[in-house]
Amino acid sequence: MLVTGGSTGIGAATARQAVEAGFRVVLGARGEEPLERLAAELGGREHAIARRCDVTAWEDVQALSATALDRFGRIDVVFANAGFGASRGFLEDTVEHWRSMVLTNVLGVALTIRATLPTCWSEAAATLC
Image (tube, rainbow, N blue to C red; front, side, top):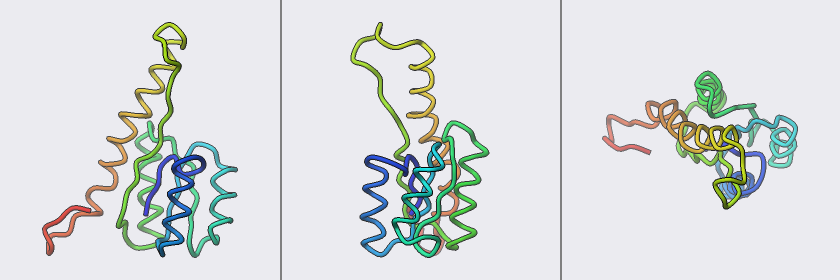
C-alpha cells in the first residue's frame, strides 16, 4: 500500500491499520524525520518504507512509486492522502498559501494517480486497483 501524506494524521493512522491488517506500506511525505519514525514504529523495512516525497513534484511521485515496486514488487492499494487546508475566510491566508494548497490537494492527487495507475492495471483480470 502506497500512502502519500503518510507521516502524520490520517495518513499515519491508515498506515498503522494497514500494517496491522497485513499490508506492507510505502510512506511518502515532505517531512523525513516523522516518516522515518513511523516506518520504524511499523516494523522497519520489512513492513514499512519511508521516502521523502513532495506530491507536487512529478519526479518525487515517480520515485515514490518506483520505491514501492523495487522493494515490494507491486502496488495493491494507493491512498493519495497528502493535503492541507486553509483558514475559513478568503482574506485570512496569503495567495501563495492557497496556491500551495491547490497544487498539493489537486495536482498531488493527479500526479499520484498518474504515477501508480499503470502499476495497478491487470490485463488478465481487466480491472483497476
